[in-house]
Length: 212
Image 1 (tube, rainbow, N blue to C red):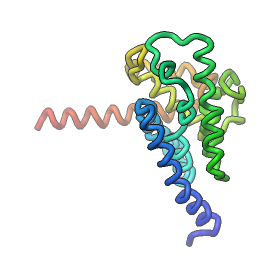
Image 2 (image 1 turned 90 degrees about the horizontal axis):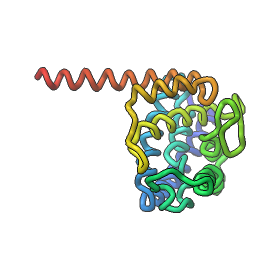
Image 3 (image 1 turned 90 degrees about the vertical axis):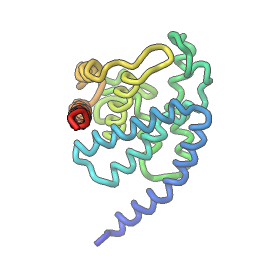
Image 4 (image 1 turned 45 degrees about the vertical axis):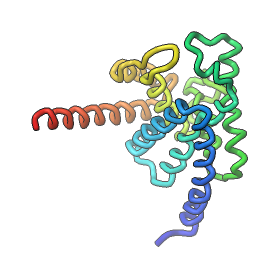
């Protein structure tokens, strides 16, 4: 039997999906690279959260936040986002505004669920060295800590205008080095499990095709 609170929660999620889809479509016309990044990050974040055993409703809230976590970049000049070299201090400061801008955009949804807050926090770090508010430890929402790990992994393994993507094994080692100081330990461990499981599955499928 579904409780009243579960039904209300489900209705809120159902009402949000069309609005999130509109934001995602609009962003895709301006910056398809970022939208593709958000999609990959969302898939990995959901896999990490599932590993940590969180419920289906929290998974859906994280998914909705993850697919628009960089929506604030819609306000960052395209020449900065696609710059092939190092950013100047001024340019980097502009890029960092995307968290607050995304928060302001998502607040317009008037949603009591923490979707806007999760996106606001995805560049915060466990030791307080992140931005925009310098939050630390458990002051950062668990969903945001999970999103941070998925975001860092995808950013490092993906090709960028200024460098090629790095190998997964190298990036996982880097994440382990960040665990406990910059990134959530449990989320990093779950990420490693997800990536290694995917690698093992893909390797097995390739071997089966080669043998057939």
